[in-house]
Image (cartoon, rainbow, N blue to C red; front, side, top):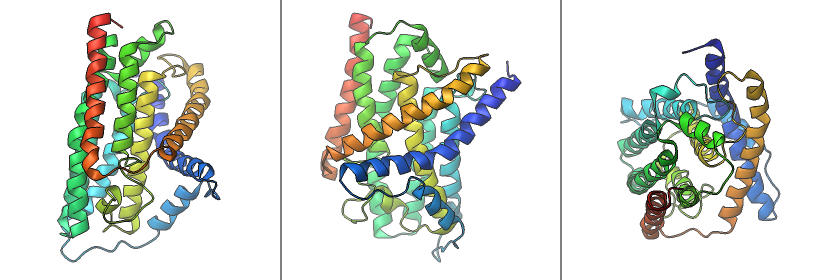
Length: 316
């Protein structure tokens, strides 16, 4: 039953995702600079970049099709919907019953298809190269992500993320071997899907190694702002998926308005810790060759499958 509290929780989650996603990106960049003993950029630098881009004119290629113009809005919309499905502050979400974990993976896949088609639309060499690499990463990462979600759903008996959260919160605090394997696999997938080291370097424009930057190389102005904002939303969404499945404590359950107020600072604290760990992982890793990425993601798939087998054999 949809109530005023559930609608308010849903709107609050979406608005918080829109506002906090660039902040999470800025926090990760700050942590990376501190670990490199460099002068860190401002925490609000992503906001300044988005403000600057939104006020600039968009320059389009002469032969750009309507698909190229529409892709930033479609990708941005997919990321907003994904953030609306994931229980970050509350499990009482009207959008959650309409889309389970499989539909969530489908949203990420839909965004990938449109950004890849838009990159190839102009016909540049870099765009086509980036699209091929992006589809390669997606072809290997999406099955691994599905296996991770299936491993978590075996404990709860449902593919709804809200049901997973409620089930894990209601259980006694314990270490589940199946979730441990799934957690390592999810970390690998999250690094690949968000163009982070060791799969991609988000701070480089070296044409021989870049993936994400090659996809958006032809965008400018508000279109580029939407693409960059969507990338921050994707990082935020993957962070919240990991927190919802493996560290759901602090998320408010249905009909608990006071718990919703308390869940906000808890979520901020968990995101801050997760952003610092992400920067630490990137600093301790080296950029691998593109030909090694399939091995990297295949390891994630195998770990997720091992997690499922462990659940069947041990029931935990």
